[in-house]
Amino acid sequence: MNPTVKILEPSGILNAVKGNELRREITNLISTGADIVLIDLKDVNFIDSSGLGALVAAMQSVKQAEGKLFICSINDQVKTMFELTKMDRILHIFATRDEFNHQVLTTQ
Image (cartoon, rainbow, N blue to C red; front, side, top):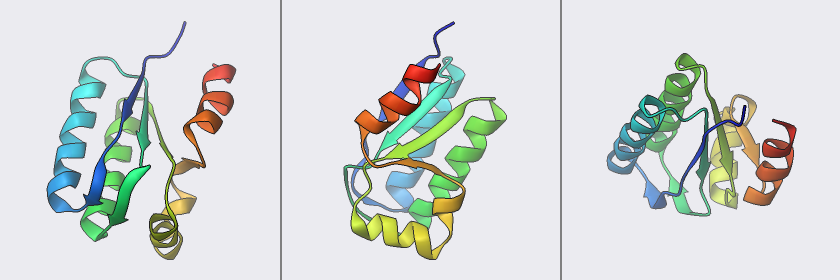
């Protein structure tokens, strides 16, 4: 059985407003049957604490629905924020979408 993969591509600053939008989108994806959610952060140039909170909430929602959440394509600022807050230890992060495709989708 092939998993249903949905990809979100937020852009700009991931803050409280965009974080809430992201959480709503993920809730909708999960309710419509997505098994795997990939958040591609290639166009996000800054993330604040509210954005981090949104990612944690998204991860919990996906996990409760027995799905999987992955992140890819983070820039140096986001990477530093993830490392400082230890988010890099709880989120599954891939350098690129190709790496995600290779490591997750080809093993399903």
